[in-house]
Amino acid sequence: MAAGSILGLLAWFSSAGAEAEEQAKADVVLRNGKIYTADKERSIKQTIAFRGNTIVAVGSDADVAPLIGSGTNVIDLGGKLVLPGFIDTHIHPIIGALNGAKCSLAGVKATIDVLKPVIQNCLAEDQGGADEWFEAAQLDNYGFSATAKDLDGIEMKRPIALWGNDGHTVWVNSRGLALLGVTAETPDIPGGKIARDAKGAPTGYFADSASIFVDEKIPSPSLEEKAALTAAELKRMSAYGITSLMDAFVTPAEEKVWRMLYDTGRLPMRVRMAIYLADPNALLKPASNDSDEAVARLVKVSKDGDVDPDFLRAGVVKVFADGVMEYPAQTAALLSPYLDKNGKPTKHSGELYFDPQRFASLVTKLDAAGLAVHIHAIGDRAVRASLDAFAAARAANGDKDNRHQIAHLQLVDPADFPRFKELGVMADMQLEWAKREPATEGPLEPYLGPERYRYLYPAGSLHKAGATIIGGSDWDISSYNPFRAFQTAVTRAGGKGERPLNIDERIPLETAIDAYTINAAFAMKQDRTTGSLEAGKRADLVVLDRDILTINPETIEDTKVLAIYLDGRLVHSAPAGSNAEGDDEDEEAGKWWDEREARMRDWLHRD
Ligand SMILES: [Zn+2]
Image (cartoon, rainbow, N blue to C red; front, side):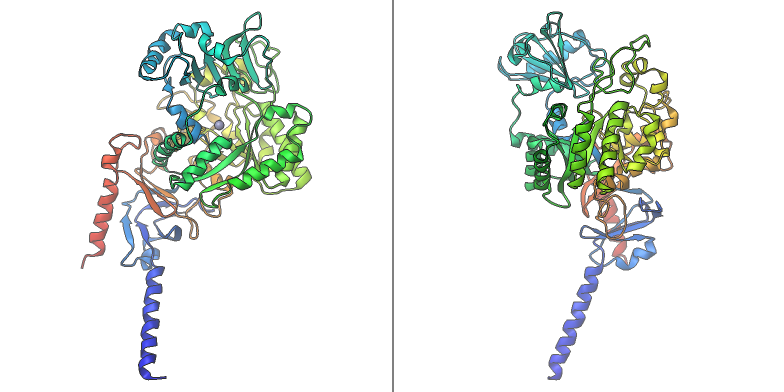
């Protein structure tokens, strides 16, 4: 072999070595910050580095310095707090986005006189024909009672439907009632309520599963329209630092939208779909969907929904155990009866939406098949029946590590607190709900009585009993802003100086952060890749404008997100002090971040 070719070979080796070294450098280094890692020790570091979509180092500025190469984008955080990207484990992005396109009654006092001008304004802007349904949403249902005739005072010619802000109730006018075809002869359906007059004729109010009579009559928007509305909402959601979510109610209609958003590159977060067990009421009937065929169908739907291990997955089945607890619906299942408004026991305890034995059999089969079950359970009887079903599954199958979840947990009997830990069932809580406001006081307090009301939203008791708490906003029932959930979880109040709701049920801020990061990732079975900031995991993280770990907890909700990285890519940046919701956001977007980057470029190239 000639000397020349050896030299050539050596030159090639050394250039390949330099290339390999360059490749080993980080793409992005965020230095001089306060990195809350959410790792096992909940350690706080100074600097984080990532390459491609993967975190390569978390440590001190000095630890990470060797990873900085000429191509590394180095950003000085100026001491800012960094958290893992937020994971919302119970949210309804598509349903919420579609509701957002309806006439909004949010914050409008629910009386016919006050609603009338708001709805008539919306009607004037709507181009719909005389037979076309007009829909309004977010009606404050507490204390609102109206008949179709009352709604005729607002609009008589077009059919109108007013949806309650609990998502479980709807009112229609006489024109609407005529189009529904529901009459005195129409039988009630389990898990639903059709308000009727003395002769049995419907009066225009439908609750829970009976709202399907209205829903199925109203044509839905096209797939592309749904996808466009959802994509716009996801962008706003992403600006709050949400990097993963679970859609808690996915029918074939929602599945198509998620699939389209994925295929067209419009997913700014990781998505898991909870496949809705169609018609849970069938579980009240013999020979129904705890059959092997029904389970096989769910397994197949779930497999088809596992599109991308990082960005679009299924593996969860959603079931409703009961309805809602607030007066007047009171469809949540309680262990002992609701009280009347004077505190005297009634005969009404709500009802379970399934036969407990059939349900336990279904859950056991789903668990054996490797699916997680996510149960909507509001009342203490629904919670107990859900835990009983998980206990049956555990007895039959052992611990299959499916990470089952019960969502909402508005009322839990103290005897059941320790069972969450024992059975490995996650407590999916809507932490922002736990505050004194018209919706928690008027329609609940007198009807439950003090002994039970004391355990309304028992986050603290569950936490102390060792339950793993995970956070879900249940948007569009409530805001998806995680900082509002953090603030309420810690203060149990809606705002500064407000009287807290069951203050003993507050949880530490770190527990609330865990609920939206590492614990949520565990529940979503994505804790190997997300939920904490550790080498080897995906770079999903948020940079905040203030240190929520040290500020007055009553101001956490004002926190703004300065930058969001998803899978190592900067997906959102905003100037300090801007509002994530603000219209001026696009104009100003990235200014704070751009300045940081420019300054660091100058600093790196100084000599
Ligand atoms: Zn929900």
